[in-house]
Length: 194
Ligand SMILES: Cc1cn([C@H]2C[C@H](O)[C@@H](COP(=O)(O)OP(=O)(O)OP(=O)(O)O)O2)c(=O)[nH]c1=O
Image (tube, rainbow, N blue to C red):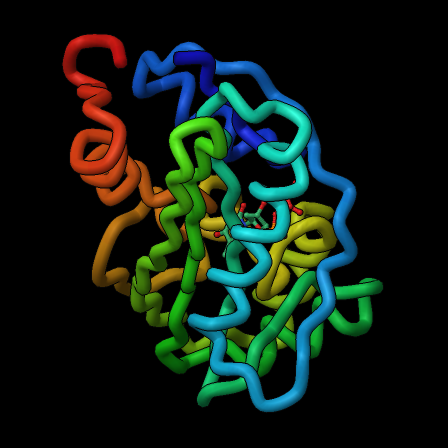
C-alpha cells in the first residue's frame, strides 16, 4: 500500500526515512486553529486528523499519516512563536521547569474505512537558564518554526536537563507508537521494511 506523509516538517520526514519506510510527501494546507476549552491532547489529535483527512480524501487508496506537536507548560499550549520576542518569552517561561511535549498522530486509509487517532506525551525538564543562555540560544535562529521555540535535535539539546519518554516524539513523530499502530491496524511491520 502506498504511504503518504501529510507533513511539511523536515524532522518528521527524516524520522520516517530513518525507519526505512517508503513514502511520498504531500503537505496539507489546513489552518491550524486552536479552539477554546480544548485539552492539549484533543488539540493535537484533532489537528493531526485534519491534516491527514485533507490528504486522504484525495488519495483514498493510500495510507496517510498526519501529526501535530505542541509544547504544554502548566496546561497552557505554547505553539510556534510569531517573532523573536515571543521566542524569548517562551524559553524564559520554560527555564527551570518541566513541560510536556505532546504529538498527535493520525493514520487514515479511506478505501478500507480505517481512521486511527492517538497521541504520545514526553516530559522535558529545562535547566535554570540565565538571560545570557537564552540570548545565545535565540541567536541560533532555530526557534521560529518550532512549537515551544526550541528544537531538541539542534542547539535546543543544550537547554535540556532531562527527558522522560520517547525522544522522537519531542522532535515531532513518535516512531515507536507509530510502528505499533502500523502493525496493529495495517499489518505493516517496519522491521521488514513495511
Ligand atoms: C519541541 C520541538 C518541536 N519541534 C517541531 C516539530 C514540528 O515540526 C513543530 C511543531 O509544528 P507542527 O504544526 O506540529 O508541524 P509543522 O507545521 O512543522 O509540519 P506539518 O504541520 O506540515 O506536519 O515543532 C522540533 O522540531 N523539535 C522540538 O524539540
